Amino acid sequence: MEKVIDIQHLSKSFGTHEVLKDIDFSVHKGEVVCVIGSSGSGKSTLLRCVNLLEKPSGGQIIYQGENILDHKHDIHAYRTKLGMVFQQFNLFNNHNVLNNCVVGQVKVLKRSKIEAEKVAMNYLKLVGMDQYVNAKPSHLSGGQKQRVAIARALSMNPDVMLFDEPTSALDPEMVGEVLKVMKELANSGLTMLIVTHEMEFAKEVSDRVVFMDKGVIVEEGKPEQIFNHPTHERTREFLKRTLK
Image 1: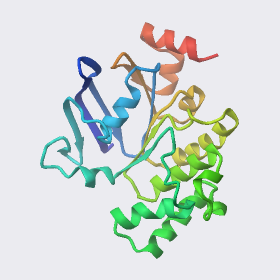
Image 2: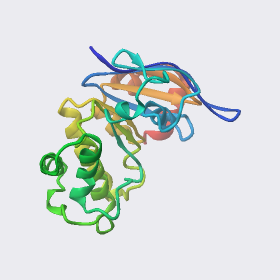
Image 3: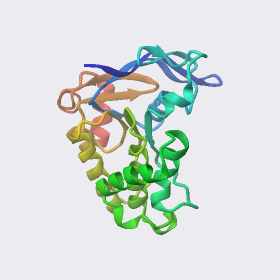
Image 4: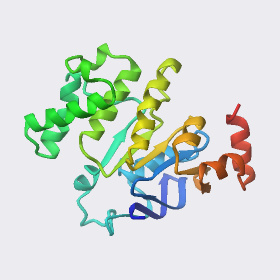
């Protein structure tokens, strides 16, 4: 299987605090990888290092055979290949739903407005938000905002979609609608790297589950292995606390 992103010996420190330690990890084309672990285990920092919202302190991120941390690499071009969905939606409040999904395409991918709108409508329909094209984000529920955020990221035709705890800011009754969309995307063959605390979801959609604790990858494997036969005591303790 082709590696989309290959992380080698990645580390990240904030001052003297080492948040990520010697991380080796890759995501293959068409694979759905869920990263689980307690708060403060380094999951979100790992994701933010992958798309360079945080600059790693050491190591390599190999994309299409090149280390994107080399100074000569075009970070902006790399970032356009990654769709990012945040906890807090990060929509443009002064734009309606349709424009939220069009602006990046026109500015970054240089698509015509007509083409961008066509692409945006396709993805808004996919996430069930095509009825809301003229609504401003302030008039939407949290679940609706997150679905628009997913459509916006998909509109950029990324090589991989990154999700940073996409349901953690949502009211419980809205979590299901976002997970449903993500399950459909997972089944469509999209490459996805998901930081999540939704264990049932991780169990159901992942090709591979990565358990992190205290800045290291403790173990990774198929969902069946991680959830039913974890090999590390730390993984067992975490799952005992989180799986009711």
